[in-house]
Image 1 (cartoon, rainbow, N blue to C red):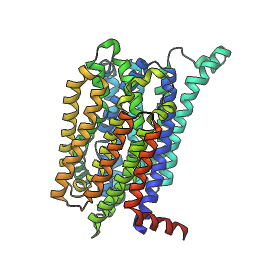
Image 2: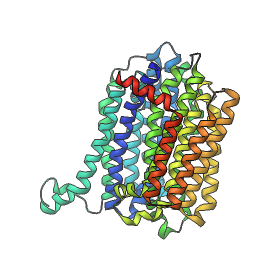
Image 3: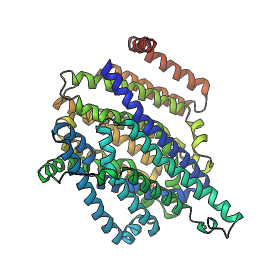
Image 4: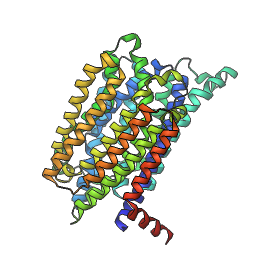
Length: 488
């Protein structure tokens, strides 16, 4: 149990590093939706969606490759230096190329060119801290990792509050003051990107010693091996970006121009209620990924992975049902503007889709450990094709509800394919009977609560309590063992 205790301790810290920034981001969504009309928030969402694609391209799978080779190579400093130099120069080349063609990029996204300029700088600064953050995780320094991550979002939040709330009041009361002269009317979207840019710049400054004290040379042989490993992950990452964010972009293209950005804004805002499942799955992945690689040479590794996945499903199923039961309470915390509430019907689908994605990430251990990342890329491409095809046919008829259907279909298919192929290439003894029971009951209760008795808590809460009892009944021995160990 010492192994699991250490694992979940690190996961809890990484969870803190994920939960707190995301919760602060939660406040930003409330701030933006309270100030911006749905169409303007839709414009912000479209730019951010494009940024996700370029984030994937600028990292080109090197984060996962770093962990793979950091654990397998004896010269770890050489791995750090080679990865750092590779990311640095690719980021610099991107910076100059993107700035030259920023007007073209703005026309493609149908947004103001200045927002694209800010986004380019944000992307480059974020890329330059990929290796320093990975180094912190590899060296098991979760507290430092958490502090910097939380600091980044805290600065971003403070700057947003200043630019969007405080600055207009200062400019109104003291228009001739130095601070008052900083205010630009109707520039809310610009201030959002400037806040993000300054936060990213500060994070880079904090982690810049990783570049100043880099002592090793670039190892071409190692770099070629890392690129061979990472490029399939790049393909998978692009496919993931398609699954996660291309629906917002397609909504902007496939819906009538007069309603497109408003629909994107409402959908993107309600999509954020899936945040709770994303928080859980992301925190789990951050803690688990280094552990998967470091534990892979142990004799009982498959059994360990099976147990971890079972408890991921148990906790995820509980979160799924809990969030869906209280979805209409949570919307009051996130969305102050009722014009955004029209898209609430997609929330159960989005939460379940993110749960499927989390399960897929756990199942994907087999192709990462067997160096068959190309198969992971193929699986992700299948998901992306499902996303694109279903969005193309469903958006014109069902708008963002069609996008939600496409998302859950894509992640569900990826989860199923990975499970089938994993059984063939790297068998793991998953307890499918219990996993299926937890998942099935949670989904069934969620459907009853949201679509049958929405906002009727005399039905929803008993269903949640009943599911919790079901978990306790099946996992009683483990729960009591943990409780007894805490008392000691």
